[in-house]
Length: 155
Image (tube, helix red, strand yellow):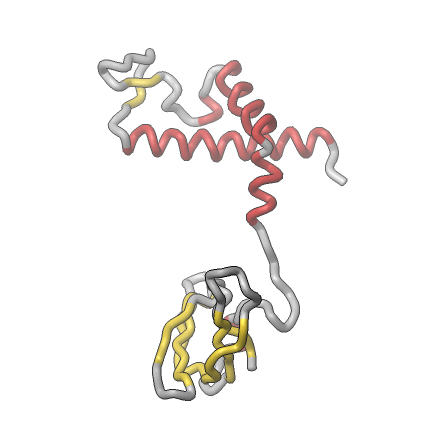
């Protein structure tokens, strides 16, 4: 269970990240830092690092994060699948690994098994995580898949 101080620290960390994203968006839209806000000149006094914001602006950002439920929303984006239907991983990759294509029906029907094939190549991100998988299917076609697309499973 999280302590109130841990939650406050997390809210402030998320607020700082949100502020940084806002700053990048503003700069991309042509705004520049300024001593005061001036819409005509497109200068904004809030275009400073989070720790240099006024206490009121910092607190407003933290409160917005709490009010909007950003912590819970961010946590909901995280999924660490386990079990036999988890995405393929870099350590298990090998030429000849048997896979099955998962066919999804746009009408909401349950997924069904499609073609069977085997891995012929793959590429990892610099971090070592699997980036994509190249598969040769039983009909001779070759396709490329993201391991997180939910379109492949182990045969």
